[in-house]
Amino acid sequence: MHARVSTLQSPADKFAEGEQILQTEIAPKVKEMDGNRGIIALVDRASGKTIAITLWDSEDAMRASEEQANQVRAKAASASSGEIASVERFDVSIFDVTGR
Image (tube, rainbow, N blue to C red):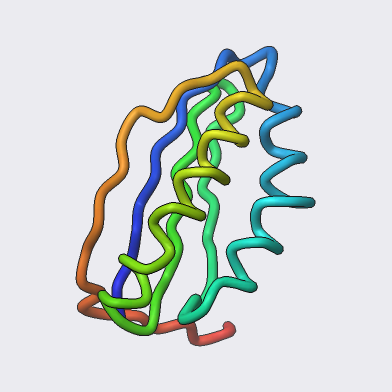
């Protein structure tokens, strides 16, 4: 499994707009991409920082989604008057959700 970690920074007073777009438009689009295994969004509303982690079946699937991912990231940044601070890619070493 592979992960793309995108960090967006928005003005705190514009954060809600970006969060709404993330939940209603971006997450559903990401979940439809071939090879996607899920999306996790970590937010700090006070600072306007969002870390979005998308999970992929393989490195090839992650790489094949790059153009679509660039578009949805840009939309999220624009909606919240923010900027894309970083985009990183990783191999996933451990993924365990126990449900407790």
